Image 1 (cartoon, rainbow, N blue to C red):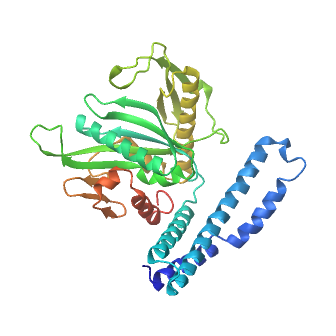
Image 2: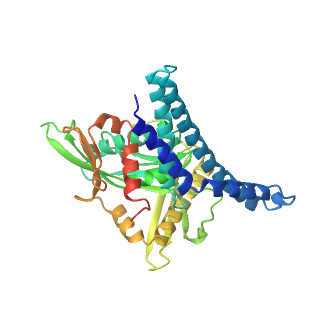
Image 3: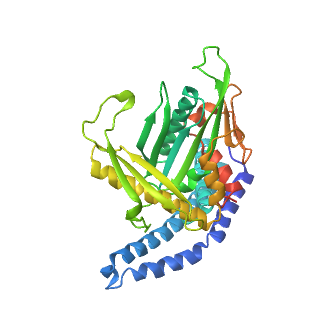
Length: 372
């Protein structure tokens, strides 16, 4: 059964949300922006009209999110009063409280995601580190962890490209998280090297081993965002795609390999960006998806330059080494610890099943602006 202090806490937090989200101002802004959509010539410029509709929708979501949190908080107060008169049970009061608390925490968390790219869908790439089969198995475990997290949060998770391991696991995988908001805002917290310590099932002597895998997350650019791709710097190859273990060999060269000669606008340094896509058996579709992934990478680079953080972030992407990990998963000691925030849990099984929200929240509270 909740206490009067807990009820006071969620009431004060809801009041605080009203203030720092500027709900009264947002209601006025919503009416003004919605009025613009009723102009007779509104759809004469479809692109601008879509941008305006998105703006209205975004404002409305903040208002609806707050209204839901306020309504649920009021229901807790009502249930608490009814309980005193024996009209509801303790369980009903606790259920109402938990619903209100979740709505408040969700809104507080979204308020931390203020970067332009935070609401976007995202692309995640996982690479196994040195260590052969053990590291490749670890990379596949991380892939499963993030897929479970994505599915639990209503995202559509698809694999764009996967390189199977020699004996088990994967060497690398590229996944997309689509169909929901703030995928990038949440998953940017996972950028970095993840370290596993366990007694390896692949070691005949049963030794405790350490392995690494890196995770890179970029916002997924859609067609409404303009990113310039120089056609002269693009080259294409095709290849036959296959399933795990060489099965389901595609007799048509539907797999595509895109190479883009990227030139840093500040330093003039050149770097080849390589993207492979075997998502479908249709080559034109794979080409379109590969181009979308390229635009996502170029957009990501531009955003990081604007935040004056590219050098540090890119350096972390190029090398997997000892001492650079952001999180350690120590299976035998039943401990998962994030080295940036010092948040840790003993629920190893839950974490590997996708329950990483507490790690994400701790990161966003510690680093409300990425890279700070």
